[in-house]
Length: 242
Image (cartoon, rainbow, N blue to C red; front, top):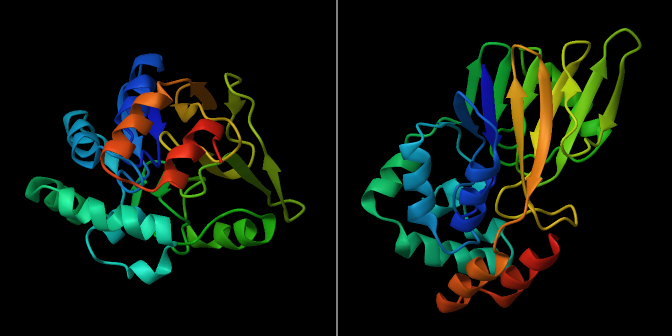
């Protein structure tokens, strides 16, 4: 099976469509949450994910849009975007977000947004936090989003050491030697200095993980954000991927 793995779309329809056009053939889609927040197209992105019948978990921005998280936990720009998103969401979009689980297990893979220990909020950014999280999932692999960074944490049980792998786009990485936490990066809000949409292809026959990048018309998303009076800082950061 080949899975298209996406995360952190953040209501950016042009980026999502670019990924769908660019991705090589796949059998199913896994989505790691944060369908909404920041961007101008929350209902369109939710509808598209529903059409694709993606296996999806909830993210912190999805919960915030539903009022399940206090907005004080977010910065001023994110709060502004959340209040706008709450007004924009249709009843069907709310219903879809409300039924999303926080954790899913599918074969050898656990799917969460933040971390297996704290699926909604925890960021896996360093080796100490990542290593502690290996005790919180049973499968060989866990796939996460939330940080907007394409990254892998691998655990060598033999020497009790955790280390990071920064994947090169387009280069498949073999799976199976170590337990791993895998992050495909962000479709709609990259934060690694590369503004191109980031996603991954998981091939469970070949047991490989391949991060891929694709450019999308950032200016279209920015125009839509300005038309909706979303914060200028959120608009400008799409240009630089930070």
